[in-house]
Amino acid sequence: MIEQKSMTAAAWVEMALLGSIWGGSFLSNHVALEEAGVATTVAMRVLGAGLVLWAVVRARGLSIPREPRVWGAFLVMGILNNALPFSLITWGQLNIESGLAAILNASTAILGVLVAALVFRDERLTARKALGVGLGFLGVVAVIGPSALGSFDLTSLAQLAILGAALSYAVSGAFARVATQGIAPEVAAAGMLTASSLIMVPAALFLDGMPDRAWSWPTWAALAYLALMASALAYLLFYRLLRRVGAGNTSVVTMLVPPVAILLGAVVLDESLPLRAFGGFALLALGLIILDGRLFRRPDETGTTAG
Image (cartoon, rainbow, N blue to C red; front, side):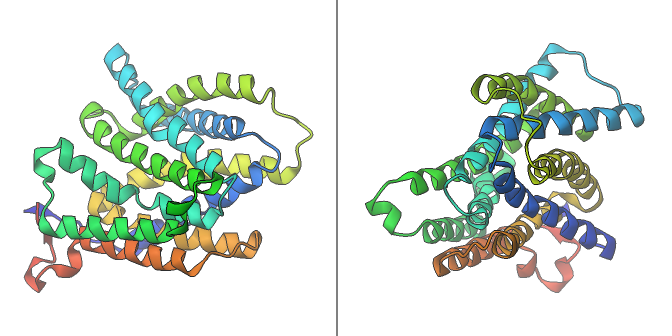
C-alpha cells in the first residue's frame, strides 16, 4: 500500500488557486492571439517563465546540473512538456472556444494513465483504471461530437491538436519520472523552459518577426500572465503541492481547470458551448474520479491507497 497524504484546508486553497491560474491561461491565449502569433505567444511564455524560475533557483541556492545527459533530458522535456503542447493548444484556440480547449486538455490525466501502464510495471491497468479510462474516452468523443466523424474541417483539426497536446503532456510525465530523478523540481522546470525557449524564440522570430511594441495593453497583459502566472508561479505551486499532498491529491487540479476556463470564456469572451461539451466533461470528470479511487475505499483505508 502507498501512503495517501491528507489534504488540509490550506492545500485545498492552493489547489483552487492553481486550477484558477491554469484555467485563466486559455483566456490569455485567446487575448494574446488577437495581435500576437502562435509562435510568439509560446516563445514569450516559456522565455519569461524560465527567467523567473532561474531567479528562484538562484535565490534558493539550488545546484545546477552540468552533465550533458541531464541537459539532454531537459531538451526532451522542453519539447514534450512546453514547446509542442503549448504550440498545439495555442494554435487550436484559433479555431475553437477556450472552454472547449480546456475540456479536451483535461484528457491529459486519462492519457497519462495509459502511457504509464505501457511503460512502467508498477502502473498496471487494473479493472478500475480501465473503467476510468474508458469513461474518459467516451467523454472526449462526446465533446468532439458525432459531426466531426462525418466532416473534417479546421475545427476538427483544432480539437485533434488539443488532444495531441494532452498526449504530449502524458508522455512527458512518464519521461520525467525516469529522467529527472534526484533533480530539484524547480531546477528541472527551469531547465526544460530554457530548452523550449531555445526552440521557440528562433521559431517566433522566423515565423512572426519581432514583437510589436505597439500592441495593445491587453495583449501585453495576456503574455505576461502566461509567463509569470500560468507558467512560473503555476509550476512553483504545482511542485509545492506535490511535496505536501502527493501526486494523487494534486491530480485533482485537472478537474478544476475546465470550469474556470468555461466561466471566463462565457463572461469575458461571450462564448457558449454545446450541451454535449458539458456532458463530455461530466464523463471525463467521472473517469478521473474513478481513476483517483479514493471514493471507493473502505473507511479503514482512508489513510492509504492501493498501489
